[in-house]
Image 1: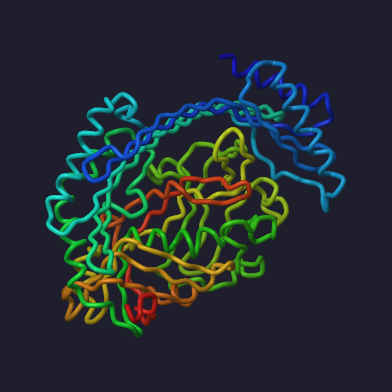
Image 2: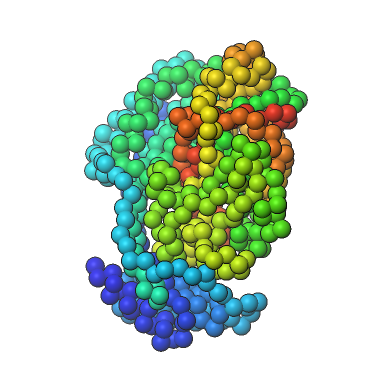
Length: 490
């Protein structure tokens, strides 16, 4: 298909109708999702989508329109509609849109993919999931077994009136499972390798082998059943050690969302509220201890996270932005217009859209805490902890609209006594205030314990858009944290 010719129809129409800026994304997307439940196929879907989204500035305001009909007549109609919307929006604008400068890139990039996941026979995938189910259900007391595989190929052509021409392809693979155990009025659950769908990365089918799904299923089933007999997580103040997957979600909710500049500037408040990180806090707020170093890094060098790309959906080259440096708050997630609003010379390159029919908005890329500089394994961290609780795998979360007060529940915990893991604890939870929590971190494991987790379903915007984000983390220790209040009395 002549993508450049399609782009010229939109760009010429937008200019002739009075637009001072125009960019467009032609997106060809394919998704496959497979799931099993208690030894049977529970879900199977395969979908494809192709269309173009056109964004313009006219009379100092944004306009957007999209179409899945890539004929000349339809594309030109959509471009004209985008200009009409922009001019209507300009009648109520509070300011003229200005964009931070960005070189118009001409580039091509694909995420690394050793094995095309769409080339694997569906029968082979189902057999793998059923093998996982069989291992989980072999454990007496497992009531429900669920497993899933997900593949996505996202190919995009980006053009702008400034001269950008960028072709990118990202392939994403994800997998996971959960074992449930019902006893009386109590339900216990264990997930692998993470909750809410498992692990997702910008990789091919090679990720499935790396996850060792079948090899871990029996242990996960046994833990789900054993939780019924475990002691209740105590209530009080304690030292806690979080596994890397739970710490990844902690970063997502208490760092990632509040650093989105559209929330800070009051332009966006859907699904995750606004932010306590007002502009006066930049480079003045002590967000955490000196061990807390967080970056928003979309570059391929950071790893195959769901927030990895070469260029964002405004054509801005991927970057690594320091967010928290030795505990001090140092940066926001920005777009070209929000960067210009606060005087930044360049966007941080974090604008992304769910698909061709959605307007790009500021989204987390890979917002990751950097590992400790000194060698430290989880075993050494636990051995260095006299008394505390080790918590694994998120079960629930709650955080206020400013992202300041939070509570998290985990699937499983263990007492730490004398530097060793003790008895299993069920319903572990902890709560706190964002800055107090990060200022209580006194240890984090080193690079060999660090994992880049993928969250495929972060919701934001209205109409709501889902987006994949990445969060790198290693196990870390926090002192004087309130624990056990989420499930008190249960």
